[in-house]
Amino acid sequence: MVPKKKINSNDEIDLLEVFSAIWRKKFTILFATFLPAALMAIYITSKEPVKPMFEIKTKIAPISTFEQLQYKNFNSNLEIYQNYINNFLIVSKDNYGVNTKQQLDNSAYDTNNPLTRAPIDISFFSKISRINLYNLFLEKINDYEFIIDTFKEYEIIKGKNYLDNKEYKGKILNYLNSIEFSTKTIKNRIIPDWYIHAKTNDQEMHLEYLKILEKSVNLEIQNFLKKSFENTIVNHRELFQYKIEDLDLNIQISLSKSDENMAEYIEYLKKNKQMIVQNKSIQRLEATFATTPIVVNEKNFFASKIVVKSSEFNNLNKKKLQSAYKIMLTSIMGAIIGIFYVLILKKKDD
Image 1 (tube, rainbow, N blue to C red):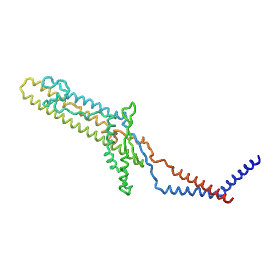
Image 2 (spheres, rainbow, N blue to C red):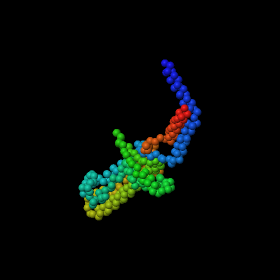
Image 3 (cartoon, helix red, strand yellow):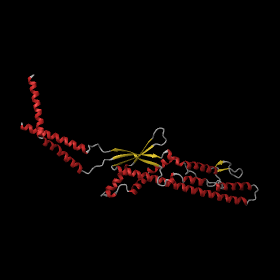
Image 4 (cartoon, rainbow, N blue to C red):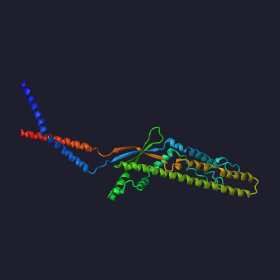
C-alpha cells in the first residue's frame, strides 16, 4: 500500500511542476499563440476576397385570378363580337344561289357573291387569360437573343470595372450561358411552375437584372398585344368596308335588271348593308380593350412575374473554414506548440 501512495504523490508533484513551468513561461506561450494568429489575420485581410459562386433559382409566376378579372369585360365583349362574326358569315338567303343558314366552308364558298367574299379571320382574337399571358411570357423569356439584347441595353455588368475587355466579355458570356429554365408539374394544377436558374458570384447584380428582365418582357408583350389588336381591328374595318362596297355594287347591278323577283333580293342586300353599318360590335370591343391593364396600366402591366423574393441561393463553392475559424485554429495550434516548447525546455533543465 505504501508504494502506491508514493507513486500518486510523485504524480501529483509532477503535474504541479508542469503547470508551474507553463505559468513561468506564460508570456512565451502567449507569444506563440497570438503571433501565428496575427500573421494569419494579416494574410487573410491582405488577400483579394474571393466571392463565392451561387446558383440562384427564382420562380416565374402567372398573374393572380383577381388580376385576370380585369379582363372580364373585354372577354365578354369579345365573345359577343365573335358570335356576330360567325352569324355574319352564315348565309340566310333562300333562293338566290346561296346555301340557307349554313356556316361557310370551302365547299360552300362562292367568290362571286358579295355576302360570301373575303370571310373575316378571327383567329387572332382570343380571350385574355392568365394562362395565355403566362405562355407569352415564357415564350419571350426563353428567347436567348432577347435576353442578350436586354442585358446589353441596360449594361448590367459595368465595363469600367474591368481593365481587360476580354475579361469583361468573358464575365458576360459566362453569366448569360449559365441562365437556364426548368419546370415542375404539380398534381391537380393546370399551370406548371417555371423557374429561372443562373450561376453568378454577384447576387445583387443578378437580382437587379431579374427585375429589369421582368419589366422588359412585360413591356414587349404589352406592345405586342396592343399592336396586334390595333392591326386586327383596322383589318376588320377594311374588310367590312369592302363588304359594304360589294353590297352597293350588287344592289346597283340588281337594280339594272328587269326581273320582278329582284325586289326581294335587293331588299335583302340593303338589310345586310344596314346590319354592317349600324353594328357597334367593333366599337364596343375597342372600348372594353381600352379598359384592360394592357392600355390602362401603361407602366405597370404584367403578363407574368419573376418573383425575386422567392429566390433560393445554393453556394457552389466547396465548404471552407471561415476567416474567424482559421484564425482560431491557428491560435490553438500556436498554443499547443508553445506548451510543447516549454515542456521540452523544462525537460532539458531537469
